[in-house]
Length: 556
Image (cartoon, rainbow, N blue to C red; front, side, top):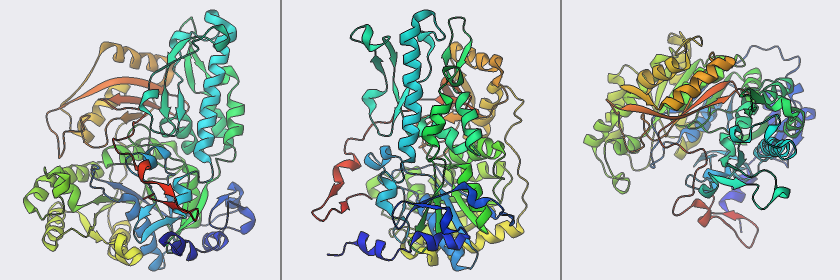
């Protein structure tokens, strides 16, 4: 019996045909079955065509109602190709944490999906597993050094900052004690686990331009401090070479396709609430070399992913500022920010929509901060009424914003035609004056305050004295000129996920600061953000199964 998944797989083209659309030869592919492959970086050698236009997808503050940012990204690529524009997408790889936790899959939805979706959502080509292995190799080498050197060696066990990771939501591993049971088990100490998407190794993979850059960055990972309080880096443990070996194949971008046959490069998967939240610069640059238009996405709302895209990814110098951006919103999310309960979002409520518009309004202000043209995309749901859709369009036009309805979930590329045309107009007609949020020469505290006030809308920033001392220590070590990566809840513009809409007169609470010297940024944790999520009361894993025909079911 043919399942919907089998029917979709039957319409897919051989991956060689998808590569040919980009001008990539079959000899440059390392196939993982008929519908996915890794691309050898040598594919870009001798490629001297002008790079394409880059479009960055972002959104208003996420809600349980869903915004459909990835779905809109995929639909926009299909729409551009229908217009004959030669487009591709550059996306992140899904983490198993959300797949089995709250979110489910991350390959789009309806008529706007990337395939083969089950393989992409699960092990794919093993990249995330390679990141996990490389990270934990360094963890093992840290504890091995402590075991043989004791308390007077290179590392002071009380100052080790490098934890362990796994690609799964597991709250009980946030804080653990290792080495108990006697001297043969190593030196007993406290540590913990983060999710792999929060690993600095994942960020390094996604920000490195090539293998030599990767090895250099891996070598400068801070793992702790010596008994003399001097920083100790991965290269001093001679871990950088072996870590690079584990990541050698994972550095190659992965090629797949949409349901309409558009090329999609999927590579890397850092979270935007606790990391920089963008796919690899290698994949984006490769797509730009082979396409007229490339659509990429940054994680969560513009206050997180988009800001980090501009502040961290663009500053890396490996890819240019986007030529245009798309800001995704939904009627349902606007009503949710307007105070409507989740179970009542299908009911028409213009008043709540208008009240919740302040959230989108703030994200419009954030996008204007960076001087790049953008279009607001209203992602249509079946429950949206004509009056609600028209009111959102009126409110956006009242802000002087380009806006278009996107119906790609129901209609695929056809439903994204109006959005595609508006994006092209924005690129060709609107002013492009990209500007960074702050000079890198500013102090770390100044950078935090600028983000807090100009982006989040905070009145003030507060932190304990020990956090300020930690930040000053990072500066004294020579890392003052790094950009800041704020780690906070994605559900609110503030650090409190219960403050919906557009919070005002709040204080951003900084709870920790750490140095990601290999990735090239300083992580500032705010509020109750966790680097190891937990499963919800009813995890998505409970619905996932394999039927008698060996087909996976229940994976959204």
